[in-house]
Each structure stands twice: as structure tokens, then as C-alpha cells.
Length: 281
Image (tube, rainbow, N blue to C red):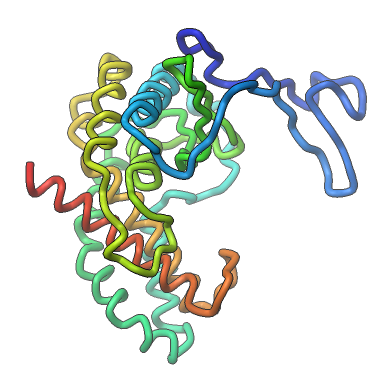
């Protein structure tokens, strides 16, 4: 697929297409097979949008990706991580963690548990509506955190990398993850919540170029859900972080004992920021 002047996805070859053990696009070592892609000279990645120019490029890039994949036959995609963005399943895991997790950690996290339980019905309703046909099932990247986009100063459209999670999904997954990770002023594990703010100019720049690029292939409901998507994805990540904390940090790598709790609080704050943005409108 090509996006304007640049290649949206860097060229790859599959294992079946390589006759050599270490082919041009494949490398094998003691850890297994590694998929290789052409080096994108002059491109940079960012943890979050540094300015409105890059935010605009991100909007065009994600929009171009959705357009490029809009006629892809979803049933041909292999589900690499079952239930990855299944909010119902994530909430079931959260309920299990509350019932069976560390009592000390449950007590320490009482405030966040209460916040998540309070706002859960809104996002579960949104997820149920999407699964019931409100949103079309698409070929979705499913992991569009901002550093999975590469940008070049001389090109309007960037490159999308890390395609291992390309599976059936909904547009809110890809829109929401880039908004959640790229339009916030702090890292996703910022402990000082006063530093966690929404970059409204970057958000507006992203949405403007995204719609300019992809509106023609989006349903009215998908467009309506754009402002909700950042809150949806930050909420689900908060649930995952907190579940892992209550279970003793068995999934996410942590740097200190309360790391996942800090992450959860941060993502709940991000979720709140997107909700406030909607209420202002």
C-alpha cells in the first residue's frame, strides 16, 4: 500500500516466500524467526506528538491506513491475540482480580477500583453497541500507540509499523490508541497526575487530517465515536493495568511494586480528560 509520497507499510516477504534460511527479509537466531522490513531512512518515532505538524501527519497516516485496508477481507486475517480488545473479557478478568487478588493491594487500590466500577457501564455499552453492528468490523492494526508510527519531515503521510496485531477489529481501537498515547502531555505511567493533560491543539490537528483523509470510508457512527475512542482505549488499559496489579504483576513488566497501580491511575485520568473534552462540546 502506498500513502501519497511514502509507503504506508514497509515491504515485507513472508516465510513461505523465502527459500533461504536467512533470506533478505527474514533473520533467524537462537530466539527464532525475525521479520525484517526495508529501513525507513530519515523517519523518526515519538512517544507523543511533539507539535501540531506531527499530529497532523499522524491523522493522515492512520486515516490512510484505514482507507488502504477498507476493502480487506477481514475473515482472511488470523487472530494473533484472541480477545485483545474485548472489553467484556477484560472486565471479567478485573472482577476475578478483585475477588482473588492480593488483599493488601485491593485495599491500596480502593480509589481506582471505585472509579473504574463507576465508569465501566458507559464503555461496556459502547463496546456492546460496536459488536452489535453499530460499527463495521475492519482489518485493524490494534496497537497504534504513537511510537508505532514513523514520521518524515518532508512527507505528509508516515509509516505504520509493528503489524503483528493486524486482526479483525473496530476503528475505535486504532483511533483511540493513537489519541490516548499521542495527544497526552505525559508518559502512561506518570505518577503526578497534574502533569497529565490533553494537548487540545494536537488532538484537533489529528482529527482534522484524519477526517480529511478517511471520512469517505467511515460510517456516520464511526465518525460520532471518534471523540469517545480515546477514553475507551485508556479505560481498557486502566482495567488491564489494575487487574495485573491486583494479581501480583504477572503480565506487564514493572520497575517498582506500585508501577501498575500508578499506570492505572494515570490512564483513568486520561479517560477523564477525554470525557471532559466531550462534555465541553
